[in-house]
Image 1: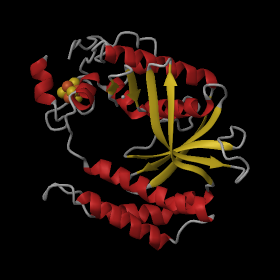
Image 2: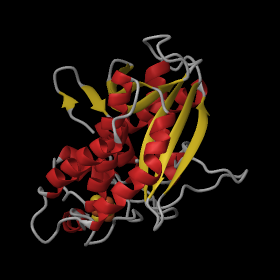
Image 3: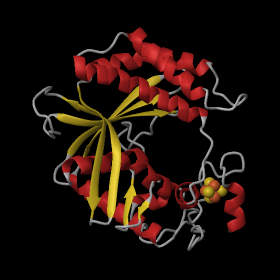
Length: 303
Ligand code: SF4
């Protein structure tokens, strides 16, 4: 790496030039290959988040293309997503959800295929599949029944200043006016995302649940890609909280055009920092330990 700057000693967060005026410089969040021909950098919201949360980790994963072991929690999260997508795509095409046993059968097949990728002895606990089935049966299917999907796993792309491309997949656009317009309509449509979490989302100043910073950042970029930054977008995150007793928490928010524009400016700063080779480690990252970070040894030796 051309520069491996140090952490900010006062905050313990990575010292990234140009990011200090944003809230994200105080917290933890990027993908992608540089297109050598055009010098256009292609990023996804998750890659941007990866960089902001720990630039050094981003460097190992995205620049050096090092792999991290697939985690059981990640498999569980992707299983929820796959089952939800299966059910909602059926509803979008046919107007109703598939029978629950059909969705559970799909979920089991997906889970079994993912679990086989793990070496023996490291596979996710089979009881987690029972938990997932229970969650779908007791709560998730009721929520899916309330939704009218317009788009599912919609691939969206946009370009900033001809030098940065953003792309990603929107989980769901729900519409309150089924069949009215083919395109996104801010009057009737709601941008939605599903997130599985181990903890209940935090409360805001008014006591209501709020979106986690990184979740909101991702949704804001999707809002910008839908609106072009020209209007506010109604949004909702449906948190699947994996407590002992599972629960669903819905968090609604209006993402204004101004907030969208601010976040695009943040994206430009991040991509400038990556082009400049700034990959400072974030030793305050939750995964910064030998057992949790696959790059721990190299990271400490390089420094
Ligand atoms: S060791 Fe810590 S700072 Fe370095 S890449 Fe891993 S999590 Fe980031």
